[in-house]
Image (tube, rainbow, N blue to C red):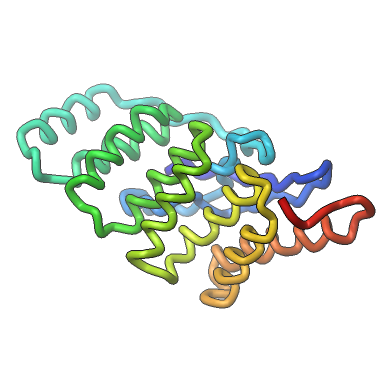
Length: 204
């Protein structure tokens, strides 16, 4: 998944940029994040992308992986790789297609499930994103990347600040010193700042 920076903004208040965090949990990527997208990082308008450019799609690699996927209809991995490539290229509908195929073959992977939820969010489907995150959490209730994304989608996709707070508090409780915990703490600090502003509501 691409490395972007999340901009928390709500009711005209800039929450701040979360640097060094990757939304989603693509195992195929091992590079260190420098900065992630909005809500999906948030495409829904409450958050803004960090300005990084999409990765160019390697068509030869795509063709090769598609051939492998066709030859191995029960293998989720080439489908996950294709989904990751399309996600990095910001071609989210195509990424969703391949993530969904991978999930059909490998339903118990919270990382792929969460990446699918993030892609749903990027295509303005916050309810489907939340449902997918719920599935991820049914597999691993302490999956901090899922919980972090859940908070982002609830805050920016659903304007559910109480739900966002609950998700981020879980991240901090589970892994306070991890990148996820630090990002969640920044989100909580932003919510606290919003609550302290005159005329700002903490509910939906």
